Length: 191
Image 1: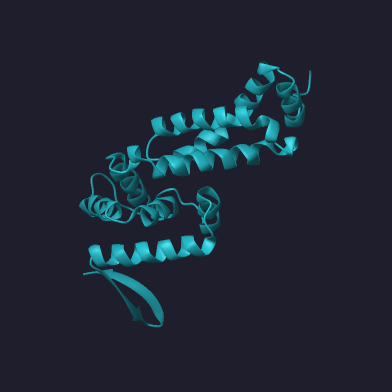
Image 2: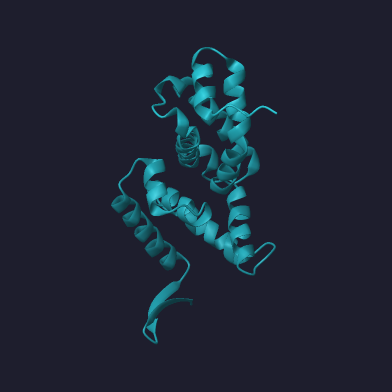
């Protein structure tokens, strides 16, 4: 029984022109990358498209890889960057798939099916300026941390926090949600 080659060996072989070695890297890591992209993007087809773009970026960028033993984190960074570009791009701005993403999120919290509140939330989300909309989508729909969003967008964490604050302020106003203090803790209610 042979031991599968380590990532760094496959990288060295791929750099030497062995296309099968790069194919082995893709086979090894495409499952986790696709799962990540499916969380970040509105639908599975979009995730598959972005995965292909990310893998093409990886193939062309392979000579720049400084730590061949850390291929997966490098691929994750490429995939996240591509997903952020896709979310910024026009093809996801007004897609009905966003309603499905919000409904899936709402379904995790006890709601299912077509939910007028989810549809209203998507409409409010689409009304945000581009930067705030992107940060809110990545934070609430893709469930990325502030640090992950900062890395994916190339923006400082403080900028992401401000964008999320501005997005929440706008969404509260549009959705008629008011914040108040109750028994020493902050809570939000829908008017």
